[in-house]
Length: 289
Ligand code: GUN
Image (tube, rainbow, N blue to C red; front, top):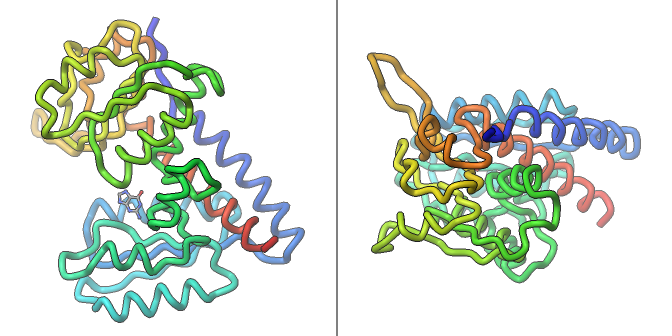
């Protein structure tokens, strides 16, 4: 029987821990851990993500501070907001929802966020720290994916496994590869210029799909008994209906795999739970600094 790795169940456990720690933090310091969420413009997917992040924060006993800015916001205005949030003692975590409108320089904004409050883990200082194995804030999606893998293998039990990551984004693919390497996996990163991605994927004990192409990965990419983490969240239209699918064709891949994450209800809820976890970590570090 294939194990369905349930992101709803595992994320609920992570959120429970955050909620108890947030209550303890409030008792200790007299304030809630604070998460500022910045949304520029009206991208429909981003609006849904931000709404979910704020709902989970509130439920977990965090203080969520929402900043919605119009699509034509200038770089200077956004920089000023980030500077204010960096300085605000009630804000422990800052998240600027990506993608930003085209006229804004994403890289510059990410670098302007205080690394201590960078709960996305996108700041170059956190990226560097992760890659040399130093304490850092770890990007939420790869962090959540690792927790799911630990639920299958047990903590510390991935040593020597061949992990293949499909996709090399800064948000998922690269930090995922760093975490798998830290867990002593042999790591292959496959991307759009790889001549034989399927051949490499078929050698994977652990396959992480993070490409953003609906159901690109079929059963002929999978080594029997592999564990599959599907990071993709793609909206498609099928039989006249809108449907959410991953980068993996779940129905055909599941019978070949030993364990697999569904979409929806897999990595998605883990990403949000890890954002709350990072906010809690940032609050603790800032409060004791
Ligand atoms: N857009 C898609 N994923 C993410 C994420 O993890 N963080 C932010 N800030 N924006 C995103």
